[in-house]
Length: 367
Image 1 (cartoon, rainbow, N blue to C red):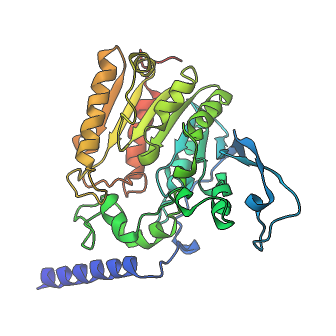
Image 2 (image 1 turned 135 degrees about the horizontal axis):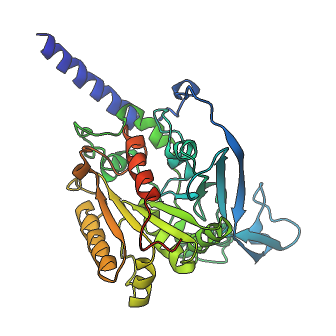
Image 3 (image 1 turned 180 degrees about the horizontal axis):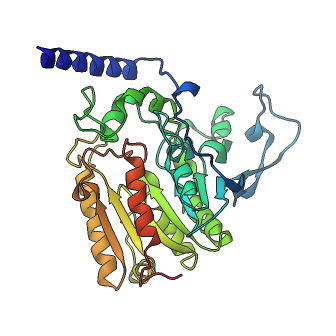
């Protein structure tokens, strides 16, 4: 009888959590939700900077104003820059780490988790690594070029000129992030803290990557940052998963190691033999979580195909003398990890796996 009662209570709790998640008003993370560490975080330095950017001309109409009325004169603005937040521990050991987020998200991905636990940003610093968290160009604190939007508003360009801006709905997020099934329940073994789904929804933001020139300025900005740090481990997640590869092509001397976390593809372009040789000189780790057979909400895309594609990439890099490794978490006894494994309940155990790999002396390293 007690077991049956527990099942009823568990079912009720799951239904309540889903109801909260799908409600039209999401509850943001609360101050009291944050679980503070008992040990102080001792820093040598912390701050922020803005990397890269291009100054462009703007007409009065493109600039507009807070009231929608154009200012008196034309001017200039900076676009395509990249915001960087950083912490440097009092006692450093090992390479600096650069963290790049994915679609509809920002650098918040790596900070305090939706349910208030320590994120990778703070954890890597506590483990002795100077850590730099970016907002991709066109996202969050890096800013967005609004020129085309004002051109359309004033009739200088047709509505069809508007670049696509998108977000993932709360319902699609449940499935696309492999936490559960769309309009259904979370997976029974999910490592994602489902009681904090509303806090996850609250940190989602519009994705303006379609407004960017090609190649994506974030690639060059990551290379600049790596060079200014004197070398770094570049970590990318999801939409940003393949960004370390592009950063390496821009500066292979200072992208010392690459970690690709659940990229949608490891072949977002047809890599040339010369590019593959560049990758072969840089130790590379590719990481995937569980439930790869879960149905995606993106037409024509499956997580299993993404994993298979990256397995092929790992083999191709190693075939030309490289040092690439696929880290599939279920093979290491870690079951139920979502696409947002950075936020999962065992996120720090996964971080330890990454730190162990980073600390290894790799024969292919260009250090």
